[in-house]
Length: 266
Ligand code: HEC
Ligand code: HEC
Image 1 (cartoon, helix red, strand yellow):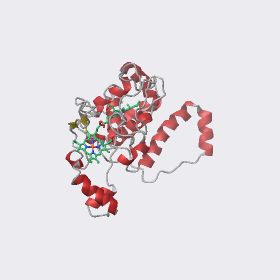
Image 2 (cartoon, rainbow, N blue to C red):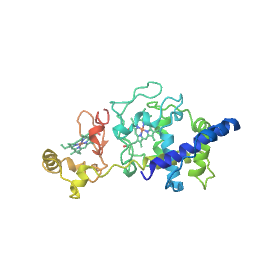
Image 3 (cartoon, rainbow, N blue to C red):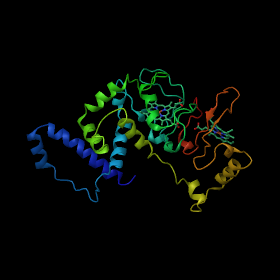
Image 4 (cartoon, rainbow, N blue to C red):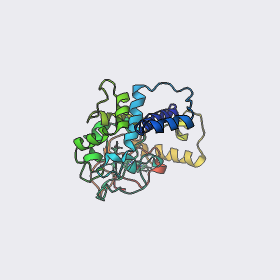
């Protein structure tokens, strides 16, 4: 991320500032007397797109998006697992057992359809309603948009962040801007430049065993018939298991080393 550190510090500053102000003049003066101004070298003003991404990141990690405040998107989509998790399935806030394995969100912005089996969810903005409001299974268990928007709008920090991220909308917090911010963040989850990518550009050399794997994968084993292209998926639906006749979207195999357990049912 471009100067992510300084952007995060800037935003943290915005939100902390509102806490100090509401704490009253004395606290502010004490603050001013003891803590020197921290210079932020090269801090360019935040563009609206960057502000939207940073807002989306905050929403992604915010458990307030779940009914009882216990579960964020990131509870199931963990960065260290390429935004998947290490479990076969992940129960929601009511301990309703999960049904499908949590997929990685790496390069999710490049996918034409979303989720393992559904062919009708085609945008990230549209997908968000499933974890937040869905009940088959219950994941974040929110009853409706009104409840969620009431909660987010009541937070002074979010009011500031939406105002920066949605200038034309006058910082409106609604059923369009919340998904747009989350989706803007999700589209930054790009995974590229692995050793395999570098080897294709002749910038690195794969170890011998990996070279044998590549030869098999793209040759005799015909894996690339489905796991094709830069994302290693044809994004098509196949039935590969006689015991499970439903057609499943070929998963990308990027970061596959950290996304176990595998397959749509974990
Ligand atoms: C309780 C765990 C859980 C939570 C919380 C959760 N997800 Fe998911 N997510 C899943 C599972 C399981 C799937 C796969 C669902 C399926 O295929 O039917 C999924 C699928 C997705 C997909 C589709 C990925 C693909 O490869 O098609 C996106 C995008 C996504 N989630 C984003 C989010 C966002 C944004 C949030 C927060 C608003 C969120 N998720 C919260 C478990 C969760
Ligand atoms: C006919 C298309 C097809 C071919 C050929 C194919 N796969 Fe797959 N692969 C799939 C589909 C579809 C799934 C998801 C199945 C499911 O979840 O039930 C999958 C799942 C996987 C997974 C699990 C990934 C995850 O995130 O859960 C791995 C690993 C994998 N394949 C590797 C391979 C390898 C290695 C080969 C060659 C030996 C291969 N595949 C050949 C379509 C294919």
